[in-house]
Image 1 (cartoon, rainbow, N blue to C red):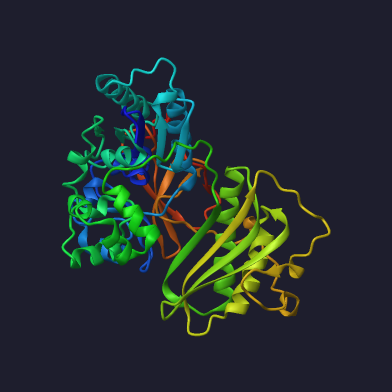
Image 2: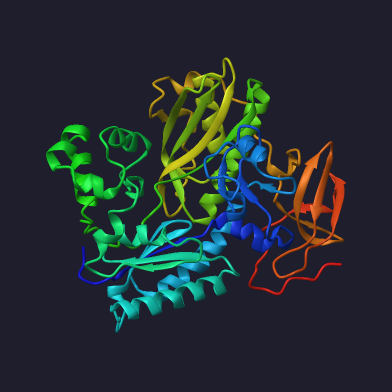
Length: 454
């Protein structure tokens, strides 16, 4: 813990839903849910209007639909749009200090002490925090963030959660415990649901209650590592530095199905779609990976993973899908599958494809089976030959009507609202799903003037 409030934590407010509202003006003021739109999907992010009805992240989408009124928006995610916004925000923060650590797509930590001529007084960092908030909102087209500033990473993160949305909280040095101890013990990073329940049983509900327990008590309850960690956190003892250039460990995509899947052709199609999503993310970050992992959740909710490590890094969707299909054959689909996930790890910054490498001969990390003995799957169709599918919220462009987004689809029809950042709410039109004039599109750029649609 430092003797100045010199660590800033930024957490963008309901980022995914905020980006959707920015890009879709007709959604302003409405409850917006981003995540799995199918029956067994889960909520990734809920707008603050949706949270007023008790909707929160990780809630089943079906439950969110029951809680929210008619007219609420349920949208699939648009990772490219969120990444564009994140890059702009991180560029703003990089101007604040040379030491910036991006924790996730919507969260970052900044070391203000590394700033040239830094005024680390409480008034100085407060003024800086206000300026950063304004710059982030302006650069991102109105996506707001909440900022916490404190003497440690832990205090800065907790402070960023105290005044959401669009808030700023500075914890002056020496006042950490006064802020920390009245809070629920679940505000500490090391306290999940299981730990919180064990603490509740012994009368520990606040961080102050936890600070009243001895180190020996906590070690006896949770073991040396976890118990010691809780002991230090309850006393605001955190000396972790801000570490720039944290690299992603893996890239993955998964899908939860409305009904348990058993049909081999449908499972193959889903794996190919997941592989395509993973590869788009690899390409977006200019990375590739050597380890391909398949995640399977069965009809009885048991979950397993299988992986293969290649002799070379890859960012090829066909190769990743081929390996994932073979892993699924090994895992089996008896009884039905509720969830599939495909991931790539052991990342590197470039592809160094071995033209003579054969993924059939790759060794399984957890499979333990002879890959060469598994029959080869059918060839993978290129994207342009696959059936066209549309999901709510997807960016599209029509040859006549311009840019818009998918409002809904079904019965061989797709309904599109034509609008974009900075335009008024736009008109709605319906087309056949295979209309040759309708095309998937990249996300709109809010930094450029949008066409005013009729």
